[in-house]
Amino acid sequence: MSRTELTVALTKAGRTKIRYPAALVADTGDRISVRAPWAADGVRDFGFVRFEPGDLFTEHFWRTRWYAVKEVRTGEGVLKGWYCDVTRPAVVQGGEILVEDLDLDLWVSADGTAVLRLDEDEFAASGLAETDPEAAAEAVRALDALAAQAHAPAGLTALLT
Image (tube, one colour):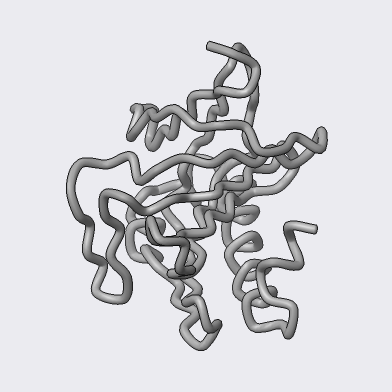
């Protein structure tokens, strides 16, 4: 694997959820950005957005922040919106970006009018608040910060400058 190619490995509750190749876009030392096509099989329809073959994700992971921001575009380049995962800070080693999903997510539509907090029930059921209360508190703070930034005039793109 070359230095411009990485593998994103997303884990959840100690198991690998998905692994996929991605092209390095930038690495600032804190934020690492990659681009990858939709990596799952087939179409995933959430009701508020559909992820499908041909979609392109530009994904931003931080080594010091508890989230990842993923800009989603169609194969033709039309912005669908931003899908944000609340995660532990990313670890980059041996050609891989290792990310642990903490269940909470945020969707922001392309026009910024829809800001949806997702999977709060899964987060509550995960038991993280009992097993790792500090991580649970960081996760909630991260989701709150993402939602606040999504509602700000500059939106999520302000995180990427």
